[in-house]
Amino acid sequence: MRKYAMLRALLAAESGFEFEPAPMASLAIIERVHDSQYVRQFVDGTLSAAVVRRIGFPWSEGLVRRTLCSVGGTLAASRHALEHGFGGNLAGGTHHAFRGEGSGFCVFNDLAIAILELRERHGIARAAVVDLDVHQGDGTAQIFEDDPNVLTLSLHGRNNFPFRKQRGKIDVELEDGTVDAEYLAALDVVLPRVWAFEPDVVFYQSGVDALASDKLGRLSLTLDGLLQRDRRVIGEARGYGAPLVVVLGGGYSEPIELTARAHVQTFSELESWYGNTGKWADPPG
Image (cartoon, rainbow, N blue to C red; front, side, top):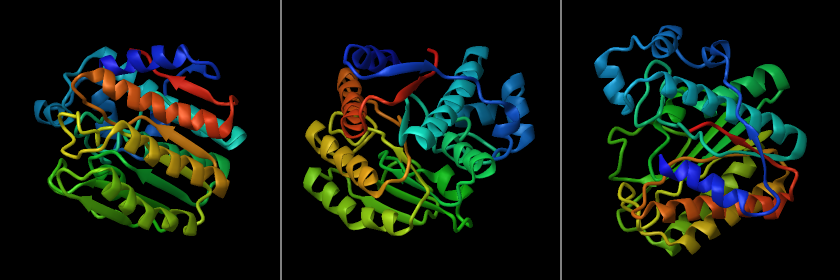
C-alpha cells in the first residue's frame, strides 16, 4: 500500500500534473458488471469468510470507501480521456475481479465497469484493453470473452498467478526470467493487432510487476525495459488517435521505491506525449 502515497508525492514534485480527488462510483454503475448480491454484501460487510479470503484484503469500511473511489477514479479518467485524449488513475487496474467474486486484491473490475459506462452513456462502440501487468487479467478476459466489441490483450507470466488462466482475445504467455529484449519483441508482434481492431477507446493496464526486483513477478525486466514498453503503448496510442485511459495495476518490488519509480515513468511518459491537459484521479489512502 505504501506505493500509492509514494507515487503521488513523486508526481506532485514534477510539473505538469493536476490531481483531482476520485469520486465514489455508484452501486448502480458497478452492478452493470457485477452481481448485485455480491456488490451489496461487500458494501455491507456480509461476504462469507471464503469470499473475503479470495479477495485477499480483510474487510473494513475503509476498504469499501477506497474500492468505490478506485472505480470512480477510472470512470473519471475515462470521461476526461474522451474530452482531452487521455486520463489516468493513480489506482485501479483491478483485473482479477469476476462478475460474482473478487480475487487477487481486486474487488470490482474497474476496467469492465468503465467500458460499459462509456458504452451506455457516451456512445463508445469498441474498446481495447492492453494489459501489461505480469499477471493475466483473468477477470477482464472472462467478462468480455463473448463480447466481439472488446479486445483484451494480455502479456503475462505463464507460471504465475492466476494459475487457472482464462481465454482472452490475445494472450501471450512469457517464461520465468524473460528479459527486456524478449518482452519487447513479443509486444511488438501483438500491439499492431490492437490498432487493427479500430477501438474507440484504449485502456492501458500499466502494472510494473514485471520488474526483476518484484517479489511476485518472476520476470526480469529493467526500469529502462518498462520505459520502452510504456513508450510503445502510449506513443502508438497517441499516433492512432483513440482516447487513452491509464490505470495503475500491480507492483511489489523490494524495495518498494523501485515500484514507485516505475509507475512515475509511466505517467511521466504519458504527460510527455499528451502535454499537461491531463487530470490524475487520486483515490484516498
